[in-house]
Image (cartoon, rainbow, N blue to C red; front, top):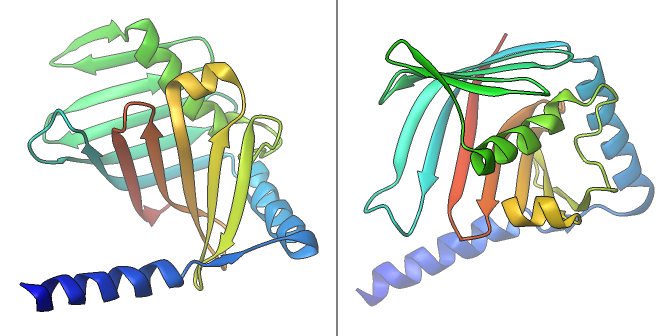
Length: 195
């Protein structure tokens, strides 16, 4: 038992050490500008993803898979394949969910959360790391960059405690997103293929 705990501690320590370099100054500015240029130049995305939700209310994490389609200026579609088929369509003014052939609107709290998160993709200037909206800590993690974003505005603070983006270092494309909710629940989205 002690050997297992020691191994786990060492593994966690090594994992944490991989992402210890906080970017500052000119290096931070250059990386943020590159991420924003890539985001601004991206008009269409089609990605498959695996989404994992953890919650104190759930006995086990819920794992979902699907496809994300994004078409600028304001069309985002999350199409879930499993465990249940459903489609979530997000625009600047509306969020709808289609499941079992029925389309409904989300309740106002969830709708606001989805629109708030999705607005990070929709910004025409690529301001995913908007420092007017978030306190942004940018880290160099070897093959990736990680942006840890803490909301500054009260309305965003009610929705998220933190949003973390992981970017491929070479392309500055988003590889993963983690949404930490105020209540401690967490949603992690890992993107697989880029089209």
